Image (cartoon, rainbow, N blue to C red):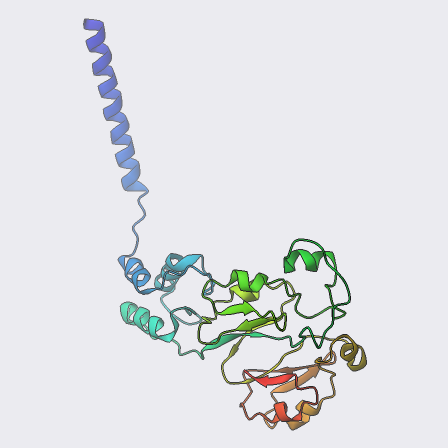
Length: 264
């Protein structure tokens, strides 16, 4: 009986000592979270899309609080309204950013870019891109497997059965950038709404590009000459509209003989 009692007492003492050690460790190594992080997280949309550049909304909230500034920080899903609420909580000023929309920089429809090869494998742009140049003669344009549409969780992008290209619903697009990251060829870009955009990424010379796709940019430079603000540049036989300088006058759209420049 005494042996059992001694064992029980010994175990109790050991448990008490361990409890004291754990208590001391918890006090010493405790991480005290700023309560403002939870308040900021509450006003965020909890989409956890990664469009802000941080691992989820909680990571973005922590970054806003710890940085002490909202410079360069933006919640693409919540937009300016959410950032204004975050600024009010933290007593900071939110930057006013232009609303962006995903832009598919390829106009190579099924009609303009006929199939030249047959791919019989998993319907994935990432896989197809790693195996070959795709099913058409254009080695730059959309592969048409729909990785971008699968990545969009907001219904802002779908594959058109008529053209074989992704179509963006501007009213549903949150500019989270998931489609941009999903495209192995980098043909999707987040651009300000309302400006001009060149829907081609083919960098081959005019004749070669035109042979691969009837809607390709041929690098003629007429859009460059027509732009009064210097927003259109020509490099590697391809025109590009700088959204920071574009005044949305539409003159480059009118000047393009290929009809490859559109207002975004």
